[in-house]
Image (tube, rainbow, N blue to C red; front, side, top):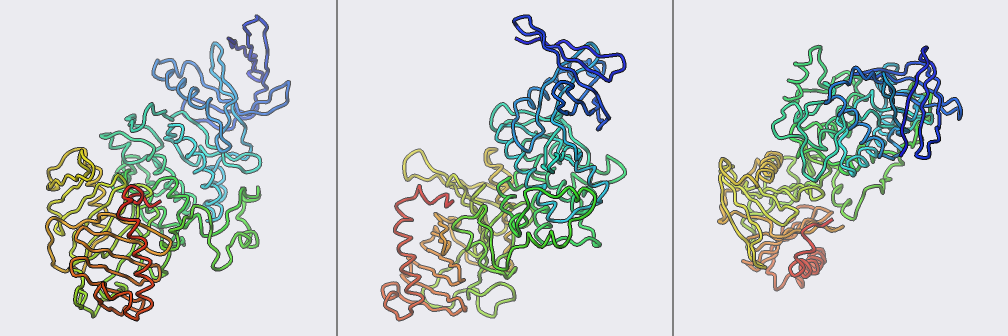
Length: 566
């Protein structure tokens, strides 16, 4: 076992590290301390050159007197313990640590292009392309940290360093925490005021990885706008604004809709509703154009030229293959914002849809009755939905105002249109057995809290302004659903199969009336007895009906395979 013994020259310019090996051999490393790179808290960081190898490092120095208390010493050792086992291209490399009678030292990888904070002091704010480049690398470091159960808890401009080749390096793990098990919550109130997440300030329920997502959103806003979203001259006021989620986008700065949308999705008070790292990576903000691996060093001082920016624009119609799957066509099947409304604050990437009885968009008040005006038509149907199965499940609202969710664990929840009570359907102890329980929103089991909060959130988002007053008991829900490259299929609890195709045509198979209702992409409605539907002469309907029948044959018996369509 090696023992480190330190000695310092009186002028503090040369620092010696003496390693006493188990054999008794002494290895000496000498560092020449250079200019001050930065300081904060109890530490100062200097340039340091290994005199023998001529390698340059960053030397973090802390006076022992400043960390004399047991808690402070424990915090320092926790930083060392966490940082020394992290090995990732976007994390500042930990080279070693030692101590002498007066100081403790951490030897780190040097980042000669300083930090994003230094860059922003010169540039004030940066372009979207630069923001994409830096944040993509920040996400890479966060994915690595979270996969190793590490929460950084102090993501900010000053802790994001730039290497010689302009590569992002996440640094300063002084506030980092290691989770010992999945679901563990930390309760220490810590962070930098402008970047701290509301659940840390609240402190009641603890916090986890989502605090890094919040700080990432603040970071994105700061890079694009030039100052943090909640910044004030008074820390208490800043904290109050964070708790209230009170921020806005300045009118004098132009942001793209993709940038605003992603920031709004991240800066959500409830940590449960923030997007995951995967959600963020697959957001249109990061998919709209090509992103350079590194930026030129000239951008440390001046914006990139228009010629440089143009080379990363995608040709019209070119979509990125990164983070896509077979359902991407369905998610992006409409350019009409009223046809496919994007999720409100808090949702990650999602596919949402909205139809009225005629099959036309809800852009205007429809002149066609909300009832499908044909024999054998359904009493109610799915009117809007949001696919959030990459994290929670499918949220939906029926035409009668009842809302619900099909969760990834195959449990279902539905609530009345007035939001007074809900029913929860879960698997019973025996195969094929379901248990139905009814609760009010004021009184329900603690273990359902997360699911109830999600239901309330999505019910608010999927507000149905045009309700038909058709009640069903028990409350309606989606029994199963499937997303394909051509359609989304809902098997409803009241003997209806509803299929919404990528071209906006729609089929409704009504088992109780033995009719099929077809809504063409032009909004024309036909109703045909199911027994005659394939021979009706309507080629478009027949083609879609055959496709639906093929899907249904796999949908009903293979229940275990379709609950999570991704």
